[in-house]
Image (cartoon, rainbow, N blue to C red; front, top):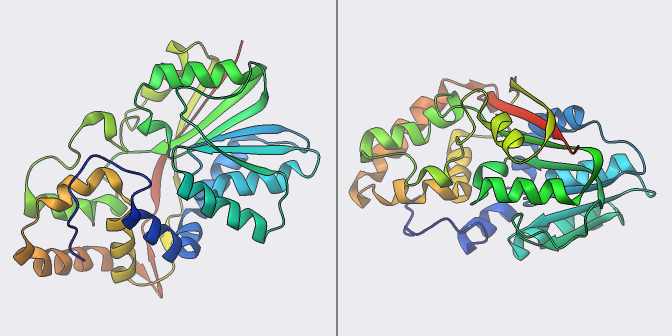
Length: 280
């Protein structure tokens, strides 16, 4: 694969939507343990009204909708209407009438105060442009004593990223991420996400780092194609690779990833950060 786009991150870009649709089953399988970790951490209950932020194609929101049941509701928001449509299709396939999609920016949520019993966000909080503003908005729409629960990436130096984008950095030079504000690893350092939650007015803040299963049910060639297509913040890095160097880059990535092959899967594991805060 040879990326041609070199622009600011666009989560609803056509290349990403095509990949999201093509690989949705295997992507969901790879991320299932991370989703389950956040579900367990958040502790949703039947009948709850939940806000799921940056829902993407809906892995977390759909799981939550199945738990809260017909008396509850999950409102899934995302900036990309196209990704929300994929999420809605998946919810309809599961006959989940309590899953609602709404295009919205976390910095300006279109909901009244005290609307939700719980807020969740899986791999999205790192990309809020104004983190403090977005977290204050989340706090505003929560009911008193309701929790907001987040899952973010741990460090870049872990198998999934080191064997892929880490290899590209060695060939292309320069930073892995063009701007710190667009980094998936913004909250990798211990305490940074919990500090952001406190600064935005949350109380009873908790944070932990956890390693979860992160296993691609297929070949290294597949997971590398998928990763290039959906990892929006790395587009500038990929764009710096000269066209005549891609065969060498791909070969090195495949070799690095094969170290994690277990049978017919590529078993990377993932280090993630879980954090939560309560509305006073």
